Every structure is written in C-alpha cells, then in structure tokens.
Length: 433
Image (tube, rainbow, N blue to C red):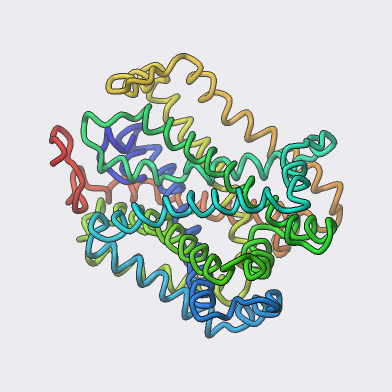
C-alpha cells in the first residue's frame, strides 16, 4: 500500500481502499502514535541504563531492584530521559536518517547478534545452563488452554515483525519501483524469528547459569520484559567476566535499537502530517512536542505505561484486521499480483487464506481471552479503570474508533494528492540514486 500510493497511513487507505475507509488509516496511524508516546519513555529507560553501565553503577553486588524502583519512582529522571529520547529522535528526523542512524545501525545492530552469540556460548558452558534450554523448548501443553498465552503470542508476533503497525507502509514510501516486497517481507520475518530464537538461547541459559537456584531463575523469567531486562539482567551481568563492560554494550545496543524503532514511529506521524500539507520541519516539531507532552503520564507512572502498552499493543491486531480488509476490498488476487510483479519469491494462493484468516483468528483469540477474564475477575473485568482489564481496552478503542469515524470526511479532505517526500525517498516512477 505504501509503495503503490506513496502516502502515509491515512492517505494510503483513502487511495487504496476508498474515501469512506480513510478512518481505517487514521486508526492505524493513531494506534502507532499512541505507542510512540510511551515507547519514547521506554527508550529513555534504555538510555538511562546505558549511563548506569558506562559510569559503573551496574556492578557486582548491586541491588538492581532498588536501583530500578528508585529510577522509576523519580519522575524528574524518567521525564528527563523521555525528553532526551524524543529529542534525539526528532533531531535525527529533522537532519535525515541515512547519514545518522543507518550508519550507526550497521555497527550496533550486528553487535547485538555478536553479543548474543558470545553470551549463548558462554552461558551454555556453565552448570545449570541446560535447564534454560529445557525451559525454553519443552512445551507445557496445559498452557495451550490459556487464552492469554495465545493473545500474548499473537500480539508479540504482530509487534515484533511490524505487522499492523503502519511502519512498513511508511518505510515503503522510500522504495523504488524495483524493490522486492516479497523478498523484503521474507527477510524481515526470518531475521526477526531467528534473532528472537538466538536471544532466547542466549538469555535463558544465562539466567539459569547465574541464578542462585532454579526457583530464582524461573522467578526472573516470569517477571516480564521490564523485570528481566532492567532488574535481573542488570543483576546478572556483573557476575560475568568483564560483566560491567558487557552490561554497557548490551544497554548501548538496546538503546540504539529502541531509538531505531522510535524513529519509525516519529516518521509515521511526520509523513501523515506532511500529507496534510504541513512542511516536514514543522511536522517534526509538532510530533516531537506532542510525543513529549503526551508521554509524560507514562514517564510518571509505570502502571499507566503498562496500561497503554496492553491497550495499544493488542490494538495492533485490530490494525492488522483493517489491513486485511484493505487487501480484500482491493482484491486479494490483485494485491498478490502487485507483490509478485517485482518479487523473486512467488507468493502463492496461501496468501489468500492468510488474509481471510486474520480477522477470524483475532475474533477467536480476543473473544476467548475476554471470556476467560470474565471467569477470572467476575466483578472487575469490565472496569475501564483497572489497568489490565478488557474494559479499559474496549473503552479506549471505542473512543478512538468513534473519533476517526466521525472525522472520516475531514481526514479524506486533508490528505493531499502529492507531498514533499522525505530526504532519500523515491517518487513513483523514479529510480533510486
């Protein structure tokens, strides 16, 4: 859709599906933008822990849980590093991505793979490490009856590869006519799955190897992404040879990777504003300013950040359903033909089945989870003020849905037929320099 229309999410849905469906592009864009508000805060956390690693705060014997609680309990710190994160992202978008982040990522992102490989080899040589592989690969079949497991897996898959985000659509505006959608999609999915597996094989054995007991290792792994990253890994790294150095490198790679993701969210917002006739400089300043102000609640409260993470993380699945509808409305075989025009990886009719299956899977998995939530929390599952309730998701989704549907005509009128593409983008019909 991005490569064909050369427009952001709002304009792409209007042009690809029809003016009446412009609200779908607005939903997709706002869903990503709401994630940007709190993701900038998370990027700030990574930057802060990078400074902890560089200055030697992360050292042997550290009370990593107290360090984390002190940091997140200090709004002046969390808001400051949130500001630093969105400031860096805005500056790079203003100056251009190619000369800054792309060059850095060519060094930093491969360093993540190297670091994880070293950690995996080191961890697997230690006593108890095999329990980590057993924990990873031995299935607990009874958990397949838990809807939350499926919902988490579905959400993580969409989040991790960028499906439903609108980020891939935004990146595709930069594509030349000859760029291969099928091959790029294959590489993204393969690299994401491969690096995730490598990360799991590196970190899980490491956690079991350096934990004082198996129960302590399981506790660490069940602490969630935030607890594992900022509490347990900060505690475990100093126990390794040159552990403080490794912690610094790890959090540097994490900060750069988080920044790379944050940049794509900022660019998505800037591109949509540019489609509405606002010049890129002004659009970037508006985006960065709004992201800072509306990200303050997440910087102030981890509970609020957790709420937004769940609401809009699962909201990505709705965006995926809207993309599937866009493909269906345009013609599944027609879209498949567009992909195959310039792809050396032939996309067969299984693609048709996937498009039809996406909304069905969402309805089944989300409905199943809500049903189980009703049985788990019979008196509070509907309560929109509960941080992790189905009620809070439905309320916030409904408010956004009503807003974008009511403003559908306004969005459709605002999008310009052409806009000033960002530096390095390729207009339709042009060859890449």
